[in-house]
Image (cartoon, rainbow, N blue to C red):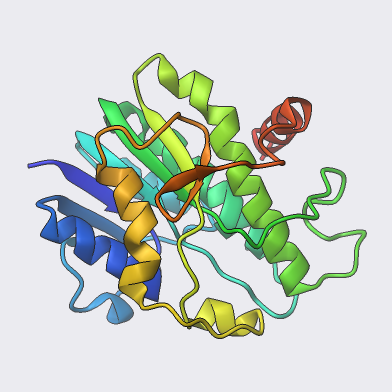
Length: 244
């Protein structure tokens, strides 16, 4: 049986992704922050704080593998600026670094030909390489969220070549507009069901040939991403993230 790791499965879209992969025959490993909220989800649960590298490393040290699919989906959007115990702004830590750290830690367990899906968003932009943590800028949760989603899209582009030597495919995507705790924190509702929101991530995780690695997708097709096309900025962001 193929195995998938899905982060953020206690959220509406993440839960639908997990259920969809389970229905497709995947065994699941679900790292979640709140085990109580994860009751009823399919698969093996593990308590992990995805904003903290030590917590991710402790979790992945017990993962035997092989892992065929990794869906980095977890995200949060606090209305006030918050920091992790390590002093990292929380949206950057969870929504961006958590994606990278999980992939780095699971890399030895990923099979040749594995799929990595970074759940990003069309709601993206405003990234400031000189102020990723809003220490200079006034914090706004919408600005911080948009920056994190831009970073997700650029991170997929940055990682495509390094992962290609092991035939590991990676892509980013906009999932859909679902009425959720996160969308509400941004002041939005959302008209799509969780299942509709999970459709493109699931398609990327399971479709035989979804498209080129490193690209950005929405509605089951590749879309032009202005952020990923700026190769110098992509490389600069990647190098900056590796410093954490």
